[in-house]
Amino acid sequence: MSGVRVVLLGPPGSGKGTQAKLLQEKFTACQISTGDILRKAVNEQTPLGKQAADYIQRGELVPDNLIVKLVAERLKEPDCEKGFILDGFPRTISQARSLEEILTRMGLVLKCVLSMQVPRKSIVERLSGRRTCKGCGALYHLVFDPPKAAGICNRCGGELFQRDDDREETITNRLNVYDSQTAPLENFYRDRGLLKEIDGVGKVEEIGRRIIQAVGVVAA
Ligand code: AP5
Image 1 (spheres, rainbow, N blue to C red):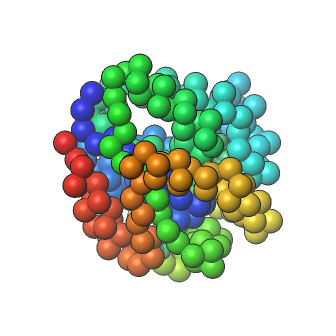
Image 2 (cartoon, rainbow, N blue to C red):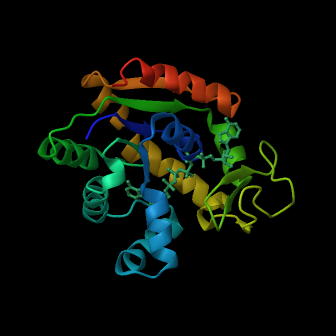
Image 3 (cartoon, helix red, strand yellow):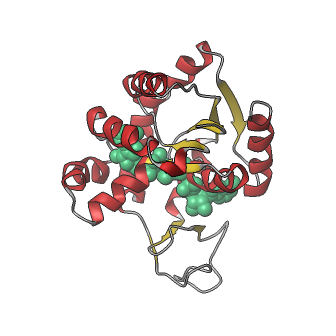
């Protein structure tokens, strides 16, 4: 396995999913979004989905053991051979230690961890206006990136929906969970010399260029 191996770190709504999709194309790597994998499992009512549903609904973290297992399996799939972008994982120090163990077993190391910096006010604005395509997963925003026809995906014509956890009270809980459980990862990765802070404010393409520049320095 070669190529880019990065973690996208950042609070809910900081643009991890948006940028992961751009990076995936740029570096021909796979995007591993634990949130997307969990939401699919919930919709399909798989055993994992049944265990995860309540946590997601409340804006809390799904237990580490469930998440670590799914990421370890996903990293072994062939489309990860050219590299991977981890979007939404790790989210706790324990998950970060497990990731180190998984990669060590695979003979790999992370190239960098990109930490998206976005003020709280913009985050709430972004999350409350987010719409996602049921068909292809494309992301939109009612104000910043609206679809051409209301409620319909430009790319595949699929129906757009609002995530259950993008309601105001759940957003507040997700932000609190981020501060207490995920933000400490910044120091964890800073200590390892892997952390790169990315200004996440501005046009999507402009932020993409900042990220590619930061990753490009260390890309294979
Ligand atoms: P997850 O799906 O990972 O959600 P999240 O981390 O809260 O992040 P989001 O998807 O909300 O935001 P994002 O940063 O990707 O922003 P986006 O690009 O969409 O997790 C959901 C739940 O699953 C968790 O709460 C937890 O329960 C569980 N879970 C997942 N992973 C887990 C783990 N590892 N451990 C335990 N539990 C886990 O952008 C947001 C909006 O802003 C969009 O509308 C977009 O169009 C817009 N936007 C993007 N960039 C810009 C810009 N530059 N300017 C203006 N608007 C922009």
